Each structure stands twice: as C-alpha cells, then as structure tokens.
Amino acid sequence: MRHKFGIMILVVFVLSLLCTGFSPAPVLAEPIKLSYANFPPAPTFPCVQMERWKTEVEKRTKGKVVVNTFPGGTLLGAKNMMDGVIAGQADIGNLSMAYQPGRFIVTNATSLPLGIPNARVGSLVLWDLWEKYQPDTFAKVKVLAMFTTAPTNIMSKVPVRTLDDLKGLDLRASGGAAQILGAWGANPVGMPMPATVEALQKGVVKGLFSSLEVMKDFKFAESCKYVTKTDTVIYPFAVVMNMDKWNALPKDVQSVFDDLRVEQSEWTGNYMDDHVKKAMEWSVESQKVEVIELSAAEKAKWDAKLAPVTAEWIEKAKAKGLPAEAIVADIKALINKYAK
Ligand code: 3IO
Image (cartoon, protein in one colour):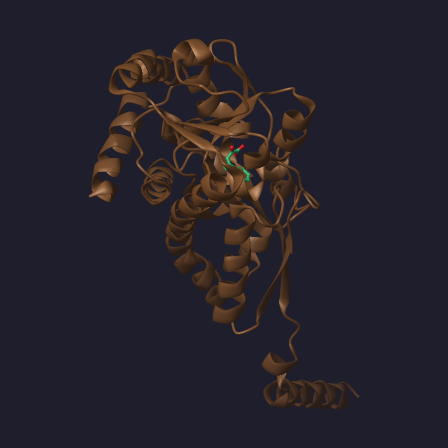
C-alpha cells in the first residue's frame, strides 16, 4: 500500500514536470500592470515625461509591462503623492518636492540660488546629488527619475520692472522659489501648481513664479501679460515607486527601469528647455505678452537680496545634522561639470 502511494506521487511529480516544461508559459503570461499617478493635467511637462516613460518601458519590456497613467490628480494629488505611493494607492507617482519642503531637505537644496542655468543641467545635478546622499526620506521607495524645471521667472497681470513693483505683490510659489520671492519683498502664496488656475481667475494672486512653459500649458498667458526675466531657481521633481511592487518585479524588468533612470531625467530636462522656448514664442506672438528684462543696475539690487539665502539655509540644515556646506559645494561643482 505504502509502495503504491509512493509510485503515485512519483507519477504525479513527473507529469507536473512535463507540464511545466511543455507549457508555453511566457506567451500566455498576463502582463505586469502598473499604475502611475500624476498631479497636473495631461498636457503639462510632468505628464509628457510620464507618457514618454510609459512608451519606453512598454517597448523595452516587449509588452511584459503595461503602465496605466493617471494625470490630473485622478489617482493621487499633489500633496499626498509620496505617502500614497508608500501606501500602495498607486504603484508609481510623480511629485514636486517644493510642496513638502521639510520632507525633502537635501534634494530641495537644488532650489537655492546657486545658478542652475537650465533644466537639463538641473536634472543631472539633482540626480547626482540624490545618488550621492541617498536621503532617508526615500528609503521606503524606489527612485525612478529626478528632474527639474527650467529656472523660474515672474508671470504677472501687472508689470514688474523694479523691486518696488514687487513689494507686497501676491504671487504663487512653493518651497525654495517662495523663499526667493520673500527675499525680494513680494508676498509668496503657497499652493500646488494646478490650484493656480483658479487663484488667478479669482484674483487671489496677481501672478506666479515658476518656469515659463506654464504660460502655454496652463494658458496663463491669457491673463498674465507680463513676464519679468529673473532666471532664478528651479523646482525639483521626483518619480518614485512602491518598494514592494519594485521588489516583486522580475530582474530583467528591473534592469529596464534602472537603465532608464538617468536617461529619463535628462530627457525631461531637454524637453523642458525646448518647450519653454516654444511656449514663450507663442506667448509673445499670439498672446502679446511683454517680456521685461531687468537692467544691470536693477538686477544687481535683486541679486544682493538673495546673498543671505544660501547662508541661512546652511545654518538651518546644519542644525538638523546635515552636511550642509558639503551639499552646497557639491551642487556648485555639479553645475560646473554639467554646464560645460
Ligand atoms: C510645474 C508643476 C506642475 C505642472 C507644470 C509645472 N511647471 C513648473 C512646475 C513647478 C511648480 O511651479 C510647482 O509647483 O511644482
């Protein structure tokens, strides 16, 4: 009896081996489906880069991975992106780090006034900085990309030609960019970018301080007829993935995602730089926007107001136990490296 049972087990074992061996499992396998949340509307740059990433991933994994994208805050909003991804409400999420300045202290140091000249350089600098310091705040997620906007400028309903024009002016900005506005004497009003549309319509703010591609992508040129060129700080962004979902991916898929990280970050920087040019051509030609350039003397006054900003950040970051001077020195060195 025992002997017969043993043979049965053996037969079942051999049969099951044959089955797995001959079944066309890879062809029949369901694709891995990943959700990707984003906070602004589909035509804006964070979503354009999301669609580009989706296309590349689906192509490079030969259909093994399918990415479902959720623009416009339909899955997660601007301020709960990081926590939502950690909790698994979305598998992947794109966030603007300026909305939680205290949470992303190291990476937000890229929005100090240190002279990042464009989004391509900003994105490469941010990536390297993150990789070097690997702040704890990202310990619970897999980082898939980091990029920055182009430098920020003032978009407003009233002309801003001098620091006096700026004094007490309500302008929308977040994080490091808001601090810059404050140092100039304006009144920074914090809110995520998508909320700015209504705030401008209702007159809650008179303009905003951000990268200029939003003039076209959010149609801000229809109400903000003035742009004051300051080319000051950037806004840093991150794309993060739920850690359990990352760990569950097959190795070959992980390699595709890993290989895309720097490429995607630089691609987004280049897209942004190019798109700012196109958006401003449209704004000037079809929306009659006036571009105000500060005179050298006026610019010197604006720059002087920013002189203490970095020193103050260093003091605060040091008090929190961060190697603040090294972080600032690294950012400067990386700007030199990539701006050449
Ligand atoms: C931004 C955020 C969402 C959509 C387009 C955008 N262009 C520049 C930004 C950065 C910014 O101002 C912000 O609030 O993160």
